[in-house]
Every structure is written in C-alpha cells, then in structure tokens.
Length: 160
Image (cartoon, rainbow, N blue to C red; front, top):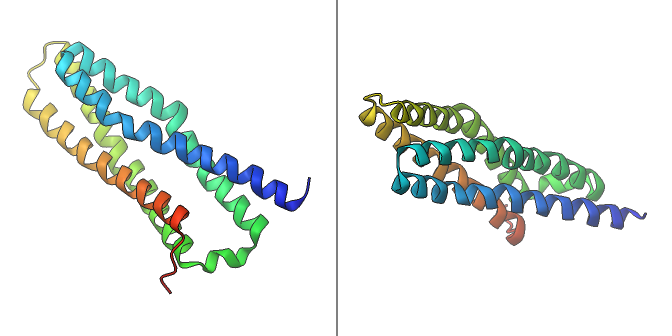
C-alpha cells in the first residue's frame, strides 16, 4: 500500500468515527423526549439506553477520532498542525472532551439515577427536573462543539 492509500484508509476511519460519534449524539435528545412522554419507567429505560449507546459506540468513536486524527497528521505531515482550522478543531476537541467527562457525564448519571428513583416512587421530581435541565444543556453544548469541529474539518478555512 502506498502512503496515499494509507491516508485514504485512515481518512475513511476518521470520517466513519465522526459519523458514529455525532450521529448517536444527535439522537440522545430524541431518546430523552420520547422517554419523557412515554412514562416514568420508559424515561429511565431511555436514559439507560443512552448510557449503553454512549459507552459502546459514541465514546469509542470519539477516541477513534483522536487516534485517526493523529495518524492522519503523521501520514500527511506534522506541518498540518500549523493550519488554523486544525488548531481550532483540536482546541475544541480538547474542550468538549473535558466538558463531556467532567460536566455532561456526571449530569447524565445524576439524571439517570434520579429517573430510577422516580420509578421506585421516590419524591425527587424537582431534583429530576433540575438534573434533566443541566444534562440537556451540557449535552447540547457538547453536540454543538462536535458539529463545529465537523464544519471546520470539511470547510478548512484559513483564519491566520
């Protein structure tokens, strides 16, 4: 295989990782909304399903992005790191990863735990509403940052 063949193969993996990571992330709000409308038990199931999908598909796809991105830079040339669109994309990726790990994931875990308590009859409705709101806001922030990276990767604008 030539270097160009390797670049193409890794680029395909990189794009597939983006499709999986962003694709599943975009469905989380739909799962949550359907669960909210269906009932207390269904909401808890929907939140558990989001966690299941996230652990098995979305998070590995985000990790694949980092790995394939580094391999692409290595194959294409380290000077690629001087491109403003890539510098910004990497900065956003680091920020969204930190936010996802430190803010969104704990908010989602809290929301899920409170949803499970509601299934058991606990009086935590107000706490659940607060937790769901926080998880929703941070989920949107992480998703918007991911979309921004995709736009930068496709557009590849020059800022400096």
